[in-house]
Image (cartoon, rainbow, N blue to C red; front, side, top):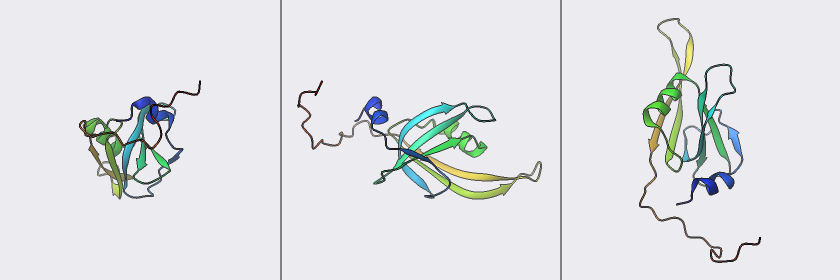
Length: 126
């Protein structure tokens, strides 16, 4: 299993997810608390879809995404799926809001790491 340091150091560039691809399914490669918005702090998930060279960042500030993160506590290395499910209307105030579905599958602790094609025993260049 690749450790978190190597995973973050070698992560591909991330783009903001704007419902495409939908659903967004892949490995959670980073998770941190984002505190730069106009509302309260929210979790940021960075997801790398299988076979993609582009990762997507998802700010989980909306109620349905915030609930998903609180309920499942997704950890780096696991599989995350987020799907934009459309709009709904609040019964309280009549305003519309985005609805998302989410799923998390923890990493298999018994899985073997991918085999490297490069010489792991090669001396470091420094």
